[in-house]
Image 1 (cartoon, helix red, strand yellow):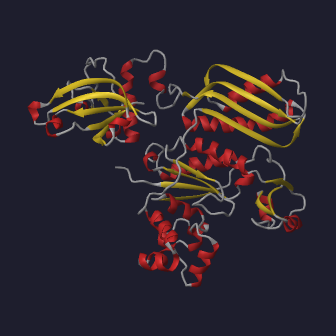
Image 2 (cartoon, helix red, strand yellow):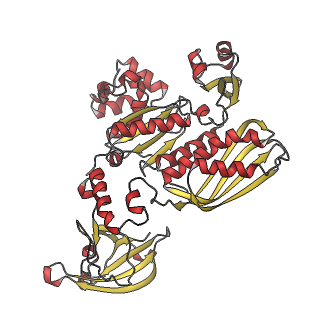
Image 3 (cartoon, one colour):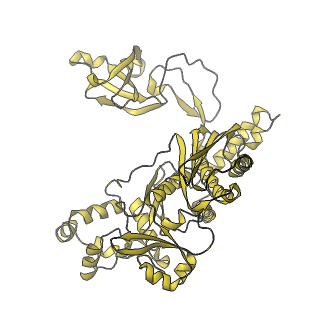
Length: 483
């Protein structure tokens, strides 16, 4: 079984870096206003080098970087951009979690985060170092400054992103307390008591921690060590792509839109790559200063996922557009995502070329096994068995063709059927289908199978154990889920 390994990415300048399509040139500050105070929450690298820091008053920041442009913070835009980036991360893992600054259990120092499980992907991408290089190259191309951390739990990986660069890869126990997502009062109290590292804190008995600092800190430490579920919300891919980009200034010509659209379409392509998807219909919406809208529907001959192709099509379409008013915002919307064709991938290119015999597939399987491990790839067999738990198996060689019948079967079976406490809450759709088999090997079954839908709308494959009826009401069990 693969050991869980989590990669955390912290974006300390996300209020600005999430707007790279608008701020590629020049010096910029993003500010937030609370009451009468206006302070910096993000800055370009040259402003940081000049001494501008997070939380600094705008007046002080202007003294250090007088030529910097100033943008107001847009939390909704930050979350939308982080959600798009979560789609990109799906190429590495389907366990992706995200949070913008200030969303628990994360710190509030202006950083937003992505966290995803990479242990199952390491072999596919050539190991930890190769995977980190690939991710870092992508983020550099996107213009996203970041800090990375890897550990066996999400919270520990996040803690490493807050460590000084020289200590980010040290033993977990040696991490400074400032790496934890603690409020200022708790951190100050711990430091006043003489605690400096995570290891010193963990050396205290849990009862002592609870008595001195409360249950919240103990819960955080349990999650960091993997003693409790991490509790982070799971990101799920949307059925369609939707995004809006507010521009820093009004654009009066279609040529002026080209640069911003390049960034917008690159975000789309990165999302599609992560989702392993393609689209054939795209709608571009130009939102004007007077709130009127120009809609451009782009229908492609075949599903596509390449940024350069999108850019060429959009630019060609823009040559036929005359702007009726300055553009202040751009929207992008797609049809339902389609499964991306894999025939063009380098791995399968040998078997996909015209004229290549089907016998080329064993060579492809050999390459897959070399990359993923021998046991990771096999042939699916359908043994001559009626019991669902014995009706499929894997083998090293192709199966002999076997008729499978027309009965509907779910793709997902539970290894151990789950008792259903309240079958009366289900809506029965089809059945019963009687299965009686296995008397010869002491694993006999006598079951009536049904398709049923639960209150959440899931289509279930359940059965009634007929043998159990002899001792009372027949129990129902959940055996599988339909897609």
